[in-house]
Length: 151
View 1 (cartoon, one colour):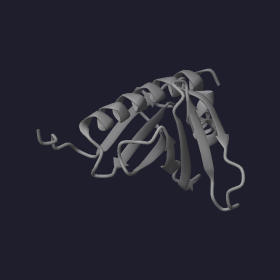
View 2 (view 1 turned 90 degrees about the vertical axis):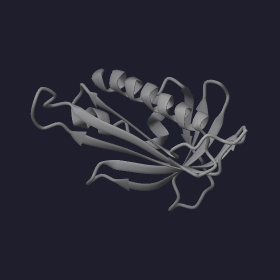
View 3 (view 1 turned 45 degrees about the vertical axis):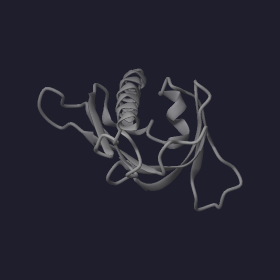
View 4 (view 1 turned 60 degrees about the vertical axis):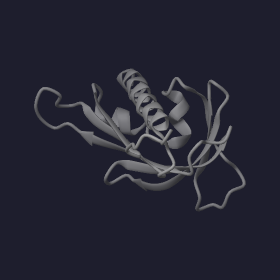
């Protein structure tokens, strides 16, 4: 049976009912376990070159991902990261993700924060991978909202 053609990207977003500073403060790869309930641990990987930021995410199901920060902007308020290793192995070759925060400056959500979390997967990612990424991002954004609203 042939594979079902699918988009290899995912984009999820949320308005978080918390001030921009409370949300942006949490968007550091090594801090994700402080808000994302699917992570039991997130820690900087030691022994890499000083100009490379690599963080190991340990999920509650035992999966371990090493993610590399590819880009960070405290001016435009986003981080981009890639998965460089996984235990168990991933079923696709690569993914690059970006989390971006925007302060909401007017309207009903003024004083809150708009957050987007995108992922661009290699062409060998199937529909199941994309669906899983969509739901993981939605859960993580809901967890981020809970954590930021406590600040």
